[in-house]
Length: 219
Image 1 (tube, helix red, strand yellow):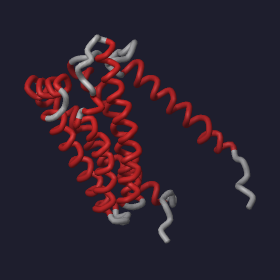
Image 2 (cartoon, one colour):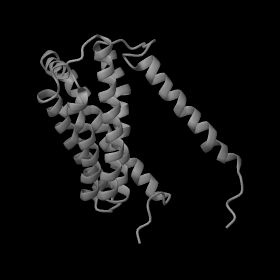
Image 3 (cartoon, rainbow, N blue to C red):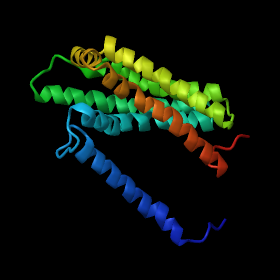
Image 4 (cartoon, rainbow, N blue to C red):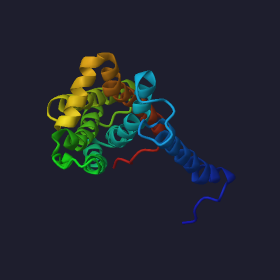
């Protein structure tokens, strides 16, 4: 079967959008991320909070957003399976990053691959897709999609915050507990605002996709 004829607008999707995404990720990693070489927002105060949300928070939103949107548009099994893949990659990358960081400082007593709170990045990615798919159950009603998205996102945010605060390895646990003691508002913003945004933005995106038929076909 012959495909559609080439149109100038195809260049937008093939070239312009990828370039925009590359530039966005580069800017976030270098100029916004507090650990970036030329970060401009600082590491403390409001600037540091915004920087963390736009970098680490943004990364977690992508990891959780893909299983969430598949759970809403397809079913709970697709959402859970996507979460296993995305969460697994994020778990391995994050644990490896922290192992390398502490090893570079001569500290070899911590193995973040055995950190339960790190492992729960994988678990929560599975859960967010499964919960959203279970609650929406294939419905494209916008209110139901919002309810499913927000419920799944907030559930996983609470679980992850508890894991970080109570069972993570000592360096991460001390940091989490210290942030809640020193500035509870800032700690709440970092822990929950990205999840609230995720629970609203993804259902909106999913609903728009249904308008254009961009969802798996059910037979």
